[in-house]
Length: 300
Image 1 (cartoon, one colour):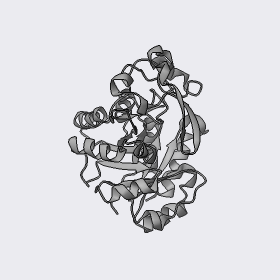
Image 2 (cartoon, helix red, strand yellow; image 1 turned 60 degrees about the vertical axis):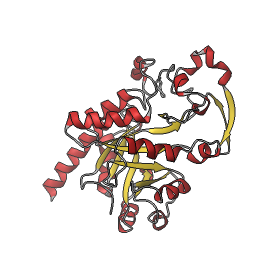
Image 3 (cartoon, one colour; image 1 turned 90 degrees about the horizontal axis):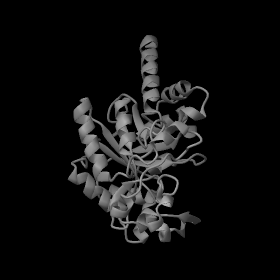
Image 4 (tube, helix red, strand yellow; image 1 turned 180 degrees about the vertical axis):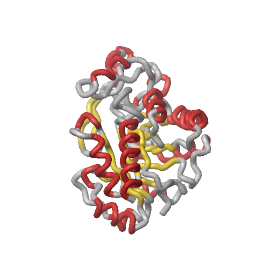
């Protein structure tokens, strides 16, 4: 089995540490590492000039202050993406220079009002900057920090002449993160995107599966190395089936605000045998893993 990279279940900072800082910012990724995360996960979308930047959606009105920029008011438009209409400002309509005039804001101000104190502090980071941060934090911490890069809406971007996958591989190669040793993995909900990547890279590939779906484990094992499932799907039976097919299993996403006992949630998933946990509060999940490991040693 190519993944997991280690026998220890991995804690992955989902968009960094968005329980503490606005998501998909360098500050959020840096904090995730310093809270003990083994890896960070940026969501990647392109600018008009083809630079990959970190936003969960390419429509950026929820996560930046773009609405406060009158010079960009004429860029607001409505598009059909994935069969639905979306209105707002889109990364593919802005150059990197234009995007750099914006600042990140908290995505969930009602859920995380404390994070709004950071609104306006940080720009939208590029993948190049994130790769540099991975190297810097690895040297600083003495740990081999990993990158879990998710390509968003890659088929849509390919249809408008912005090949996200090619750009991703070029950037990873430039930063020497493209080897098969597990330093980086690439995630997508789109099977065709992952199948295309399987013929172009030795990087571990992650098939993401949303709640309510039933993954075809045998099919996924023909092109990917990891099954990334919603926490509701990460049952002992599914994990065992995936492991038998040679797939690691990651569960997403742990959000402490949404459950009564986040430590118990993490322990349940670890008991199910998952190989990785995506968390909005990675420090808490690192603590839960330590508690779980201690309990395993006592009973083992």
